[in-house]
Image 1 (cartoon, rainbow, N blue to C red):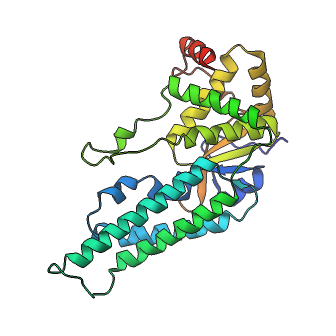
Image 2: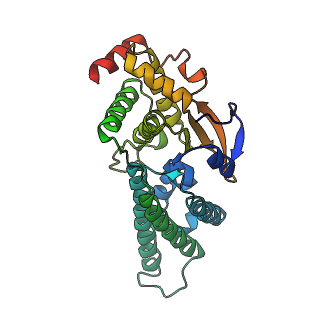
Image 3: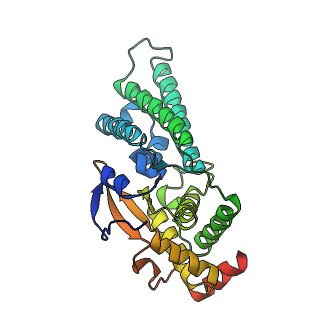
Length: 287
């Protein structure tokens, strides 16, 4: 199915995007800014460290996004749903810690004071994340041909690893602020593999909605690898991705998003210094 051509950098409302696309896979970062600034949650020592204005904006964004998720074209991957659950749990743990801290700080004894307004609002966000997690689980993408999907995911994982497409986690944290353990769920790679599968093997044009720049690199590097690997089967996949394009949208404010990549364009397949001939050979040998 050919879709109406959009151009690089154009901004569209979520409603227009979902009307245009056959599916829209959502990343954790597209839902809320809290997903991109979890270090702020990790670093907080008291409820007053949170900006009430930002909390209220967060509540509004998540509430609107929950309504948007009622559209049947919206999809999540299992790893993105796990990330949402992790954010919910981490926020819940932080609220519990701050509540205990707040109560015991009053002259060493429990306080009967009213809850701080920031606590009330954070508990509201926590409940919204609970709803978000439940809703995302109902919308998890499930491939009909599991073996084909698994092979695509293997390609994406290898491309990501060998081209350094993901920014190191340490970039976001000072050494003393970094949580002791953070597992990489490979949600970004799973999301890109899902889009490849839906467009190439279910013949559905569609999109990815994210704020994560890693996903742009992963998608572009994977498309470049598929085109330049020299394997006939991959060239056929590229042909299908041109007929049933994957569009990558960067989520902006006010339920809008900017178009960054469309697999029907020449741009994703042009010279890419991150994917050298040597790396292409390494990836092919690894797969």
